[in-house]
Image (cartoon, rainbow, N blue to C red; front, side, top):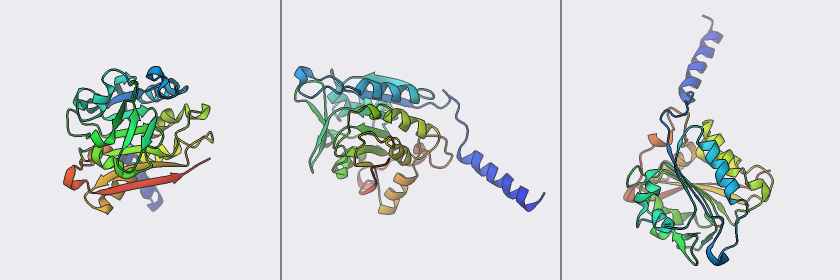
Length: 262
């Protein structure tokens, strides 16, 4: 066998190992979707494209995975998201997509629930340490990453990675496909962070910055996790291969911040 052919064979084997074909339904993950379009007494503005965004994420991700829940933000949603009762819903899935209004300060990030003046707060969230244990949390909500350190509290439960935006998450026609593109790119084997970044390359009122965070015991550990973690189609860097970092092992923030793309 010639040297050139030997190299080609080796590269082909490496490619197969790194991006193995994924069969729908085999090793499927559990998925949860929270979508808040309407709000009691219009205490928050109606999000016109909400159901489109959630539906498109749903139809892209369920090509391979199981939708465990798809719900609005009424009922017990606040307690299902916060540590009070997250084991009843959120902690039963691997990945969560949530789309609603958000506010933030240096102490917490809050997600608007359906009921008037009701918020779910990162201050009261701890994910990844009950039931199946949530690993991936995707925010399409304003201000979700204005202060990335607000995500330390949820991450300290073992949550592996969080995506969001700085400043505004616009409710514009071009944003309807963001969840779908994120899911499609992750399904192809791209990193969770890269997929989130390029989900926003549509040119329609996208936020100034999209942000992805993880945590680790050291800065190099946290940085490696945020740059390499994948959802599927990776032998070495699938999110399930990264040990959960809890409490004292979750002290450094790994952060990727991308400016607006067109």
